[in-house]
Length: 579
Image (cartoon, rainbow, N blue to C red; front, side, top):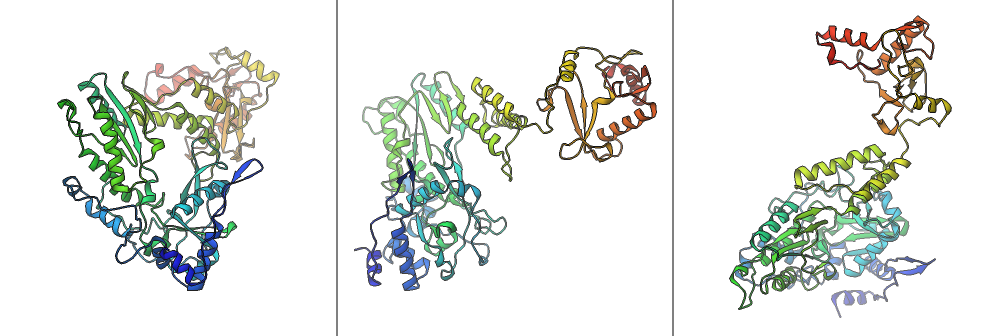
């Protein structure tokens, strides 16, 4: 019997059979917490009045002879390769005792747990799915929420969830333990930075450089593959004295959840994982082909390219180099993280092209592209939720601006252009069609059709004015909500411009300007002065806005001349457009 079973038996408890999960209800899968384990563990703590650190040590079978919180991790053999590893002391300390965070100050007691994010409620079934998976694997300790008052040194942080690809939150999600909330007093805010370990990932630029090097030296035989670590942060146990700071609740289900491993969302999780991830890369890069007949030009050490838990390999297909590379990576992973470290589902075959870092690589053509579904999914996400605190979806024009920013960043910083294709254009047209404009357009009418038909006519020139000139009726005032109002209450002015081709906000017939805040240069103030002048001259609505009497007005040519004289500039600098 394990120490846990002995401890439970001493107070008359034993673990029941696990709760069945998932079950099928209404044709859909419903996930469940292992309520039997939750009930027994909670009863044990009530009976013994034991605090969390001592109970966690029992769960992990930590003893004075073997203090390792994760029994799958072992100190690597004392080989020359391991002796030269830069972060050897830090990794061996994690193996022996777990991750030991340091805090800037004492934590304030919480009167009640913070509310979970709205996304957690939307993804409650997926949230339970992930917590149950962690409960079975020993990553999560699930207790009754009523135990909170009797447990010391507990800090609860809200749960959230984000989509996995295009799958709805109600079906599947990635659980986020938001240890950065509330801002200013969160677990992450109170964590002392550890500057001993420097995280250095190999991005697309490094992979592209490696592809070019191998293809140049070994034309036509350069290949790539990727290997992935299973579980990532779950291999790194938090020291028993500190697990209480990584708690969360689901009040509607009466659950108190303790994260026993480095959570996805804690500020130092990537840094602590890199201590192990870099160790894998170090051992792998210290390896080379062992086949006795291996050609000399393919016998050098393997090249390591790593991004978090992704290990990307680019090698020439010479002799036994490719299969030995695969074996060397697997050996390094299991040496550092134990026998369950290899994620078989994400180990790819050696190919002349494929996906690495979420990008599509084509070695024969030496091209790099972004999968079209990524840009499409990003556009749809912006349309639905935006990127703001209110979760309000973005308009068509804003989405286009953000996609342009994505292309600009990658072109200038990552060295490639993700581009857009025909499917993106169709998607954006659909988004544009269903995007509500900032100020509502008016329904189609005979008057509007007449305006469109006459859009090719000319401006007010000399003493003759045409329908294209800005008429008094074309100036409208709006309040802050976009409703038409009196000039003195206006926050925005709308000007109808027949034939305008700027297509601002998808409306060809009008341009909108808000108050500038300047006493002199302000479009709303200028429009109000035009209206005041029109009243003085008795201008009719169908007349040009700058009429000085019936049949006369201030022409575009005259305005150009006046503006040129004011700043002492050539008149040709100014466009002869309607004023």
